[in-house]
Amino acid sequence: MTGTLVLAGTPIGDIQDAPPRLAAELADADVVAAEDTRRLRRLTQALGVMPKGRVVSYFEGNEAARTPELVEALVGGARVLLVTDAGMPSVSDPGYRLVAAAVEKDVKVTAVPGPSAVLTALALSGLPVDRFCFEGFLPRKAGERLSRLREVADERRTLVYFEAPHRLDDTLAAMAEVFGADRRAAVCRELTKTYEEVRRGGLAELAAWAAEGVRGEITVVVEGAAERGGQELDAEELVRRVRVREEAGEPRKEAIAAVAAAAGLPKREVFDAVVAAKNAGR
Image (cartoon, rainbow, N blue to C red):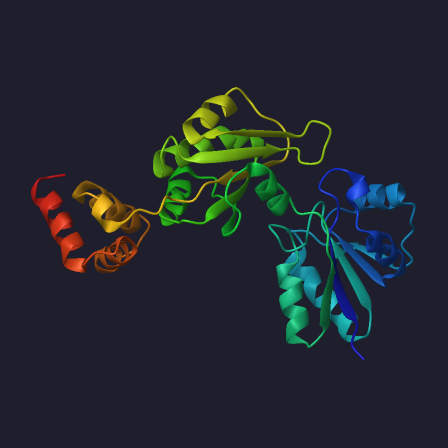
């Protein structure tokens, strides 16, 4: 019989948030694959547990090379526990590659649910949470970051991002440029830790605050685009939306069709607005 791959959530700050099953899984697993074996050691000491199985590292640098080894152990009947530094494996952390490989081999995959920075930040943000999408980390290069943001400029769902503290001010400024200075957002810092902070406000306001320097683990929650009826969109706004899509790499014909559908307008009306702007040199 094949073994089982267990994805285990770990605390994102407060060690008391560790799921009750985590200690038992750490103790019983045949193999524990950890993003950082030193942090795993601190975790097991805090939980008062000693893994009986083999402990190996599994991080971005060796994920591709180590996956076949772990899959071989799973196929051979081992119970493999995967833990990352904080939160759930596979969510902007190592894990997806191993899960996909295990599924391909018909290996059972299960989870020990645990803390999530994404869901915690959403709940604390004060923004709508009935529909949301997780965008992970934005590109580091300014041009690529703007392009990625333009792709979701008209997204109505609440957006969630991870960001490094030293890039937070640039990211918030880029968001203010693409989404609008007054678009509501929340910067969630050091969630569940001693210096937890949730700063809420418009994107431009938050960018100015972040320019003074911010530390810690950061999750940014941004309000989705407002839903507006076609009669409320003037020609200038229609042209802007088409250009945003074009700058993100979408062909003009498809961009016009998408903007028209979202606004509830005939494609011809949007097309005419684009042509008129072009003729006017705008």
